[in-house]
Length: 76
Image 1 (cartoon, rainbow, N blue to C red):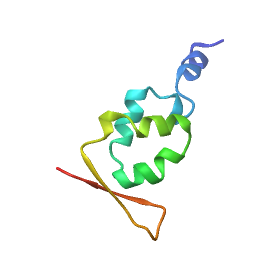
Image 2: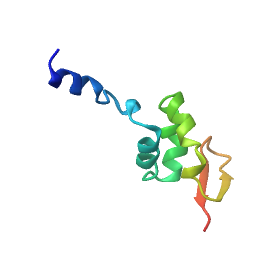
Image 3: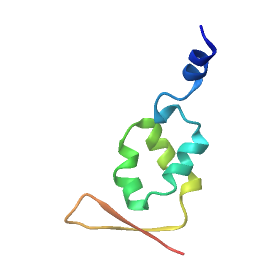
Image 4: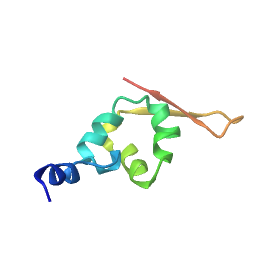
């Protein structure tokens, strides 16, 4: 086994192989509504990360009765 092969095999193979801190940093750039509606539905690990307290501030939730989508608005 060459040293090049061992370096390649130790690198992440998918985005899910990155450390939690890196994934949370990436997720911090998404809009909150997108986080709730899309990111959280990708897979179980992303659902858990999408709910991480570090990503959330105080929120105000409202529901539109004509839709199953909750509206999320950040309150400062």
